[in-house]
View (spheres, rainbow, N blue to C red):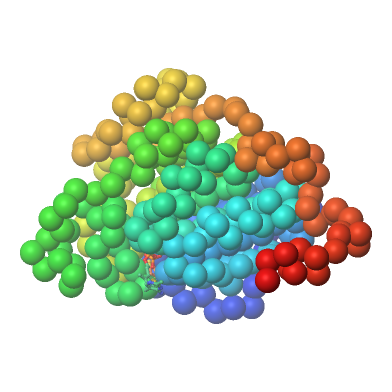
Length: 285
Ligand SMILES: Cc1ncc(C[n+]2csc(CCOP(=O)(O)OP(=O)(O)O)c2C)c(N)n1
Ligand code: SF4
Ligand SMILES: [Mg+2]
C-alpha cells in the first residue's frame, strides 16, 4: 500500500505560491492512499501547461504528453493494459481548446479512466491569455477589451456526450475533491472531474474568494445524480450560486467491454510469439 511519503518526488515544485494546483495534488495523493493502490499499477498522463507538472511531482508511472492529447494517450494505455489505473490531468486550454475533440469522444466511449481538469479559466504557463472557459469580459493581454465570446459549459457537454460520471470540485476544498477523485477512480467507466483551480498570478477575476462566495455542494441539497435532466439543469447554474459535487452518474459498459479480445484480458499479457509481424508489415508495403 502506498503512503503519502512514497508519492513525493525529488523535483522542485515551481508552481507560484498559493496556486490552486497545490490543492489538487494534495487531494490526488490523499486519494491514492485512500484507494490503497500500488504505485506500480498507477499511471498519470498530463498535458502541457502548469497542470502538466503533475507528471513530475507524483511518484507513479507518468507520461507528460503533448498539448491537448492527454486522452488519446490515456486511452491507449488503458487499452494496452486494463490492469492499470489511469489518471489524466489536463488544463482548460489543454482539454477544452486544443483537446476538445478528444474530450467528447473519450466520454461517449466510456473509457475506464479518470480525467481531472485543472480549470483556472486562463492559459497559465503562457502567461495569461483567454481559454474556452474564460468569463465573458475577462481582460487579458490577448483580449485587452475583454473576452467577447461566452465560455463553454464543459459539464453540460459531458452530460450530453453520455458521460457516466460527471463532477466538479474546487481546489480550495481538497478534502471534498479527494472524495470525488476516489469515487471517480472506483467508477467503472469514464470518471470526469472539472476542478476550479484559482490561478493566483493571471486570473484576477476567478479567485479563491470569488469561488467561496458562490459554490455549494450538490450532495447537501438532495440532488438526484441518477437523473440526467436534473443534472443538465444544474450544469447551467452559474452566477451567485455555483454547484460542485457529482452532477450525474450511471453504469454502462466500458469501451474495453465492447471488444471480446479485451474484455477481462490485457493486451500486454497476451501471447504474441506465434504472431508473424513480418507478414503483416509485408502486406502493407
Ligand atoms: C501544440 C501546442 N500548441 C500550443 C502550445 C503553447 N502552449 C503551452 S502551454 C499552453 C496552454 C496552457 O493552458 P492550460 O491548458 O489552461 O494550462 P495551465 O497552464 O493553465 O495549467 C499552450 C497553448 C504548445 N506547447 N503546443
Ligand atoms: S501561473 Fe497560475 S496556474 Fe501557473 S503556477 Fe502560477 S498560479 Fe498556478
Ligand atoms: Mg488553464
